[in-house]
Image 1: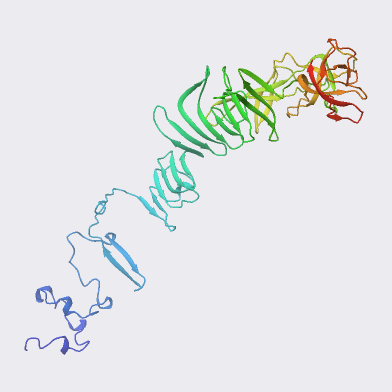
Image 2: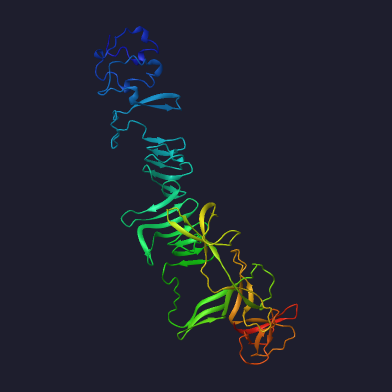
Length: 470
């Protein structure tokens, strides 16, 4: 038979079928090198339906490839499974540029496209004790979260460093400093280096910002008047405490003038100023505290004449200690009105911000404020001053202010004729009368500065500006 007599063109489809070829009739020994090439095999000549997976045997690569060494890829468009060998992947060796000796899952990519290294991406929603790195929107946490086992760092909705609910930004070293937020309470700016305030008062807390009171410098912003430091209250107050040195410096450079402007409802009512080495208290009225013996609050007209009594005013406080989040002891002093059966030195239970504390009742060491009454003695020698207003500080004591020195108004009895320079005495009914002569007496307590009637009351009495010398 001539060469090439039988070729693909001369054979009809199906002329040579597998059932007509004896086993091993066609072997590699009977086929010349390169006799069968891609160019000599028509497209789709060999397909999955014509190929028995057991037909090719005994032929393996230099390194055995098993199913465990194959990556199975599902081709959805062809509705078929295709197997691709990873020739450069060997057991526990990794791929080029990556070495691995892991014996368990080290990297996880979940269905939300989140990546976890060392732990599942959502592992920190319940715990962060595992040393791990997480990338992505991890539950309610961060876009990046790193755990060392007992600390973690997050970047996302919060920048976070610490344990539990603490937020800390820290530097290390002998003089370490850090910023710490304690859940629901403070942001601290701390240092492990202890500073000294005044004599023996020491502190490590440099500044903290509270969520209820304000900003504390060297102290907690909790309104305690017994701890050294500065507190800037959210309500606008300033609390400044030192151990044994000057707590406030007011310094004006360059020229004389106002040192302090005292205002009410934005209007300046008085000043403290310096001129030529002299400090002036402008708009000054010297006052004292007093109280009625029954702690009552009857209606008293401004400028009413008061007499002193032989009974002192007593004030009491509760002393106890609290502890802040960093373990620092904070002394507390809270005003307290004695209840029946209580006395100085007693220990009671006091609830402070939701926690019960053992507190000691301590009497204030006041030696100069006495009880008083509306003057009921004509020409009284013990005039204490004139009534200004009640001291509504919310401490439970119905104290009131008594003007005793400087300038203020005095309530004059109905129908009294006054002139500038007249000396005044008690009329015995809470009002004042003009003294019959100009001789200064022990009962003389004021001098008329102006005949201008500031206000006339319903009983006909009226108030005028006077200088007091009680």
